[in-house]
Length: 361
Image (cartoon, rainbow, N blue to C red):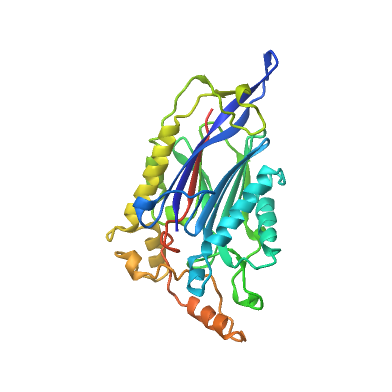
């Protein structure tokens, strides 16, 4: 699992046309990212924003900025399947669709659906499972459109308070909704949900809002108040600053004016600080994390050495099929149905993925 933080700040952009300045202002995102694995010293993002079993993407089009995170299910590794291939390809396909303009800004479910069905059409099945969260900022309407499948999710923070958040989707404890591709003939043994099952929402955003999208590695280890404390460290640089880098791919660099520019270094530092704190808390034997509390509420005692007590790879992604003719997948289904649950920060051997974006003007 991965803990990757990708901050951005929403900026108001005024495009210069000829000798006059347009009255309209579009919003857009400036982002920074940080990633940590199980060994914090090796927490470096790979090319394509993939790390371990999890992946993310940030894509821009003239009409919208799009963020996505996917949480690969590490249990597939026990059966010779690389969990990162599914989540990574899912996100890379979403990114390509956005850059090609093959999406509707108001429909993040559409992006997820198109990407998933491209994977299903591969001649060689790309086996695996993943949760996913897609967030689209419509620059002109100033609306945020979201789709969340499983126990990844998002927060929108305004004035130091959470004003919007996603609802976690679980079939039962530690068994989130997920997109899956099963081996031929074993489809009935694999827990798989439709992209249409994703929880969707749309709402207005304001300059100064913070958008945080993440897989459960963050939320399982840090309650809201801790996240908010870290976000308060973010600094703002006021003033009108001309920049040589357009924040929207459709405009030449020289034609952009950024209002109230963001301190990129502060964004990066805050992202890293959150990831580091989640890492430390995950290994604290005396810390009662949100996940540990949730487990206790479900009759499990995982306080203390949580990473040792709970099998990190035994995340439930299969369902029992009593009459499954394939012996391999029948036994797999039964074993995965046991009440053993991974810590979200350690499923797949790395932290789960987070993407944090700051809106500003």
